[in-house]
Image 1 (cartoon, rainbow, N blue to C red):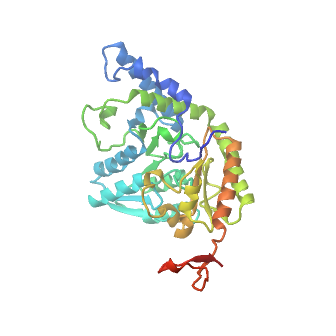
Image 2 (tube, helix red, strand yellow; image 1 turned 90 degrees about the vertical axis):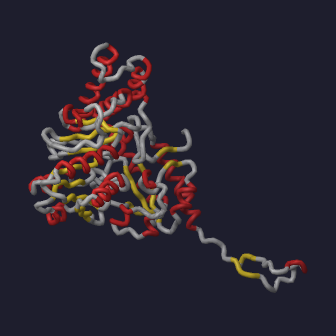
Length: 406
């Protein structure tokens, strides 16, 4: 077993070696610009991009022409929200989202509010799920867009996307989902689920960082954020990152081929981790629904411990307490707060994201590590008292004081 053990798969994933192999030739051999139409270097790049576009489209049930390549889910989210709201300003200025969204949704919403857009932030139930009736109650004639993430990046809860999309579209609103955590892990079908826009990123499913895509349903209008050359049907200008796009396509194809088996294996290992923690320790609980959940995801609260001490003590295990994009923030998780989890409990919560390269032996090692660490952190600290009458104090003690164990 190689240490440290990586279990922070919500933050990012290791690039699959098969993805790397597919990318390498496009750095050194087929290095043409996909927009170069007059020589074989450009043709090779163009064909590789087309193949990757088809693979990604197949993974989500879309048409290749409905995909816009971006730098990742954050850019895709910005393009979806800002692009649609700008293009639809004559029809309305109301956007609906959820309080447990990633900052890549919440921050663009805050920017849109500064520009005059009205944004409603819906609450979730204690299990992390949005009640479709709550959405229905908030829809207005001026509602242009509803944005609800498919799978939460902190607690792994899967929202009822198809039902939420149906409610939104029945009121004439478009439906967008940030599916960065879901794509490649669970089946996604933009047609069957009634999705109008969908954001994804390669590095969440064993592809490279810095490449993603936005699905835009055919016929939908949105204002581009980047101009200059008219690439991607005018929706996102700039020379295409061909090696990364090839990697995205290869990662998508691998997930498509092995999703069922991989999901079953992840579920077994996640359950092995949860059962192991329950047997090893008291005072452990899962945040969010255990039923509507990603197969590789677990967010656990350890009662009676300091969260910072817990994470610092896990020197051989890579996990986190929440979103990697917000790891520098000192406040506790807004997601757990939305579920009604007290701040002290939220700070004692750990997010586990298992992955393709984890083993059962690693799961068992993590359980034993946590058993030892949490038990130690829960052990009462010895109480000290002043020994003012200690006859052994030296004459030079002065203002200093001796502490002795009670």
